[in-house]
Length: 254
Image (tube, rainbow, N blue to C red):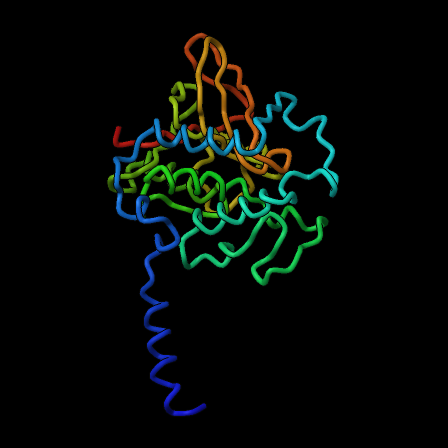
């Protein structure tokens, strides 16, 4: 290596090591142009839902058959959008931020046999929170379990000034902008009493975008390989039951 190149490389390393985790967010999100509000979070989620064609799936994927030719996240304009969820939703240090709806971090198309390894539902929630103004205090992650466990620790008083607090669905009626979550696969049997866990587990979260008598509307990403709205039954008190194991009460500023 030439000696003249060494100072340049060292300066690049210094710059990369001090990059803010929030660096991939646009200035209005980095610097909090507006207070973090539930109205903005709901509006961001709804805008994304409209972009993806306003899909509604109240069969919860029962009739969905993934096909290469029609899979939404592979389509022009949409695979790039998933890439934006990764880039803006993840912290700058997260290697997953270079993924798209069909590419790995090196820009290579990944085979659909490993698509589950590139699941982007948590990236979508992270994107919505970031763009809505949650700032650097939100536990952005490619895994829903990260912020579920964060919220559970907060509910136990272990996090000072938390941005999320875990609520038991049996006792708390979700509000607009809150997150509903359930465990998937081997974590399907997890309950509120099991939180926080000592490990990362597969899960899925959706943001509440509307409420009506006995029914909530939620929006989530990577459902049917798209951004989809679903309707969740609620009881007379507005509370939800299984499979939802936890409600993440988001501490909006307004």
